[in-house]
Image 1: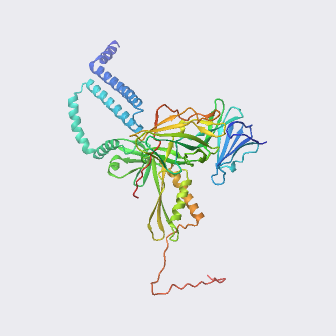
Image 2: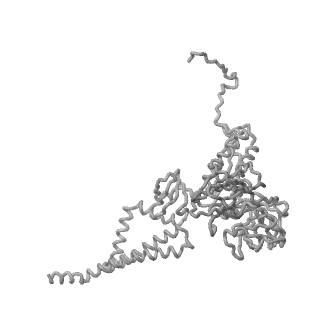
Image 3: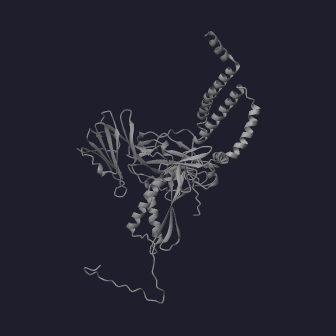
Amino acid sequence: MKEITDDWWGEFSIKSGATGHWEIGPLRIAIQRQALEWIVAYEHNETTADEQAWQSVYSDLDLNREDFASVSRYVWQSETEQITVLPALADRAVVSRPFTPFTVPAGGRATVYVSTPLWFVLASGSPAETLFEIPIQRPSDTWFGPSTQQGEACYASRTHARLNLENLIVDPFRAITQVHIHNEAPIPLLIERLNLPVPYLSLFHTQAGNLWTETVTVVQTQGTSLAKFDIEAEPPSTPTTAKLLSVPRRNPHKGMLISAISVLTLQGFD
Amino acid sequence: MEDLLGSITNFFQTQQVLNVVRAILIIIGGFVIARLVSAFLVRATRSALDHHRQIILKRFSYYAILSLFLITALIQLGFDLGLLLGTAGVLTVALAFAAQTSMSNLISGLFLIGENSFQIGDTIQIGSTVGEVLEIDLLSVKLRKYDNTFVRLPNELLIKTEFWTLTKFPLRRLDLHIGVAYKEDIGRVREILTKVADKNPLSLEEPRPQFSFQGFGDSALETQFSIWVLKENYLLLNNSLQEEIKLAFDAAGIEIPFPHRSLYAGSMTDPFPVRVVASEPGSV
């Protein structure tokens, strides 16, 4: 018995002894229900995977643990067959680079589109309790801050920030964010890297089938390296309403200041 | 019988016994209050101070309060405090001579704590010893080495010698010294190394990995490839990246040479004659 759903996330029912298989870009994951546990086996294959392809396949095929690089088990006393698969935004801020650096003139505004990696989250029970989560494509670590002593650990986006949405690579395992940049400082603002604190954002599913976060506004003022960070209620206006898929990992607060645009100056003599 | 009971009651009612009882009660009270106050101070400063400073605050407040109660108990017992301090002064001089090393360690300990070069939980390296700091005491610093052995370092040693705090900053740089054969194209080597680092998610995308050509070695072109990594991933990257570099070099046919020795019989002589002798059956 095989059944292919429209989206890779949602509620799935896996009978005892059966296995659900997902293939999302480079991630291959199998979830098996046993009498008292969930068994999760997964593997990343960066080289052969077609990045655009994805499918979630439910099958009675047995789980062959040797086919996967990692296997983990979760003891689950209740007899539920329901499991919830959810996409979630990264657990750290994500840094993107424009295809080529650009400058926002003094007093000017720009809108860029950024795509950030998603996590595969597995939850069960009511209320849903997270059993397991893993990045669909493990992003590279990076550092965002003025020096190697100050700053924060982030992920580097594998895609470029774009001024045109058409140029952005859209995958079923990446979320798109519209970022308005307001340069209120009297000097031009060079954008080489853009830090987006995605743990403060929610994830939406639009009617067009894409995953979006809320639109955010970054206001850079004079005399500070910190920028004002505002989160709007929804993704950019779409003909139909977007459905909320996951809530922020961290609670955003009004008037947040973040280090959004900065250049690391590194000097070394050895 | 009544006489005995009476004399016991009288004995307990004498001023001296009462003073002793009071002194004991003061000391017990001191222990309790010192404990409560130091615990309260730790709780009150939880958000303002780090773990290391909290421990110092706890110890100092505990001993300061306890010594106040001890002095009060001594006064209660009828000791003259002025005389006691005078005797303590003479005793201190005598002790200082006798316990020079301990005093030196004690003072070094105070400086170490003030300097804040490392904290409990940091990894430090002194000479060839690398370990995690378990305790910073007035006389010594206690380490747990990664082979799970315990090392006690006298504070005096740490004040006098150079040591490294490996976990002071959030990032670390991993330096790989890689020699490649003279026939290889350095540009290609740099390209392959950069690609390997880009593929490894633990290697930081920014600061960028740095490649530098170090010079012409005896047997190899010497290069240094430096990769930045979050401090907690240092060992993981060290293991995974070197393996990936070896695989990438093998795939690209880049040779990592071993030391060569050329035998040379002088410029005027012919090369050494070499004759291949086929082994005959039965020969040794």
